[in-house]
Image (cartoon, rainbow, N blue to C red; front, side, top):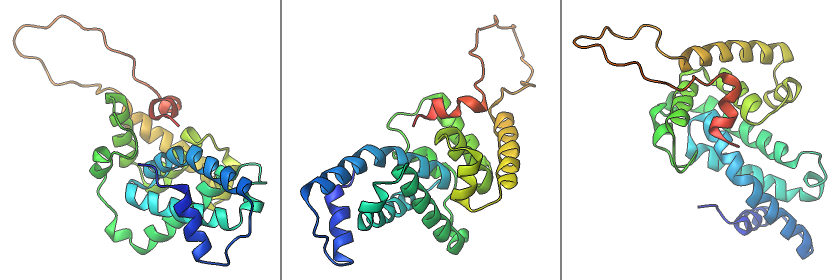
Length: 212
């Protein structure tokens, strides 16, 4: 279930001086929260492979957003600001607890990413889980969040060339993981009739398969 925005605002106000704001900013923030939370929690879960960590980091990011909502709401991309803050929080936790990272199969059983997983969604999740943390992050930001190389570099605090390199290697690895098995095992007994199969989807379709 979607956590209540009022809880985020209440936590923010309990951590500092209570805002003397009118009703309108509260309604604007609540609408922003309800609209962006489901999308951001899916994106962060795919990046971190940890739904609980993604939710915790996202809640912290929304608290910070409300504490400075007069500025954040005026940004060109408030959702991108929240995503960046939440992702950096995840990275900070991940670096401290790298040995406690959850196994990739936990993603497949998580109900956070999608309520019903098709075979294609499961295949993409498993392929993303097999990538390195760095490659998965840039691919999700680029293909799912539709960020440019420059925006990814600013979000992850890495050079543009590093983003391009990770994208290239990640795409190649993902395409290899998603392609059909070129050498199926030999068939014994009667040869079955050929069956029509759907064409394998490519890296560029990852965002469409997983949804935003």
